[in-house]
Length: 483
Image 1 (cartoon, helix red, strand yellow):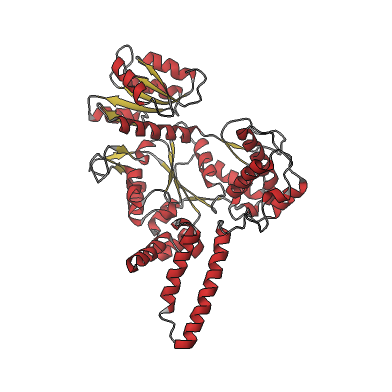
Image 2: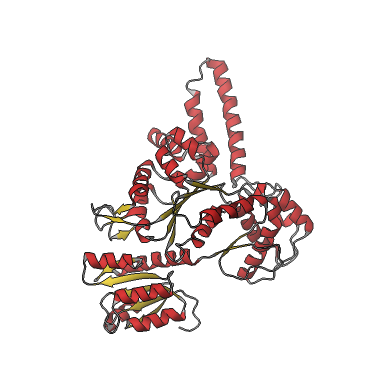
């Protein structure tokens, strides 16, 4: 398939039937399949470039077996995800596969759906590793030509961030990145990985706030088939997959206490034990964590383990909010305008000086993410003309960044709601002289209102209410039980 933009999955097996079955199995998937019968052919194809995932049989005929082919592929392209297949299960095969950098291994015969899901996960891991981070070197008129993401900013606060990255990139100690939501904490994590000695291994991000609590332990440590309801296949967890590399734990403050205990144990002994087995495996993984929460307050509330806090807080990097580095806004705006104009196939519009002044005067509660989303929306609406202050929607209209769909607007609405409830509570107090029945009801109605304003997002609701997610969860349970 010449000219295809689909990511390439390469299948290497010396049996014609297996190669044919893979082509059929992946016919409706968003991947291009290329199949080869020997290790030498596979290595030559990887050398040519453009391969995202390799599915490789262990017992290949010819001059190279599967393990040798795996080693050769990893030497050429360390960021290619390789899945090994074998019809002969053995402890040695499993150890050799993961020791030489295989993403996973599966036993023949396997379910088609299981393999498709595994290929999708392997592709996501490849993309996470392949995304490069670049830095703005000067206030040049030229845009960065490299692919990947760019950390923009030459302000004094950003210079401190760069210095911190340089000081700790090559260390294996945990790093805690702190900063508000949308400030760019994951870019710092990727830069730490890219400039470390682990850059040729895996970088695997895990959003602790986006994964259901019941599945979080499995996501970290993996599980054996049948170890719990819904475990239809064996899964290697992120910590085991990233052996030799880096795992990025985003929103670490949302991790349940039970999982915190197991993460602490892993940080102490570096042993991963999948759910459903007593056999552990020693792995070498660097942990980078990020949070927009006050972990100190969470420790005081009992929502975060103090011993895990001190274990993670070996090195801290503070990502400054955008309002503390407003001199970076012109460079950020230029970068986002050019980036998203190219992505949409349109000519980059001019930005009026008064437009930049308006952008610099705004406080940006959503930080760089909010700025980028604003630019993307404006590019769709301005249709090529110069971007004016009115295009930004920073006033009080329906497209305003102050609208009640924003966190700041939600806080304002919650304050109005609280004021109305307090007026009613004062009236009840004057009438009855007893405020005891009012306070629990007041708290529950505020919780309900916060969840309504955030469309059920408990992470955002807990931030608005100023309580931990665990505390909010208990309040929600009390609401559910009273209904």
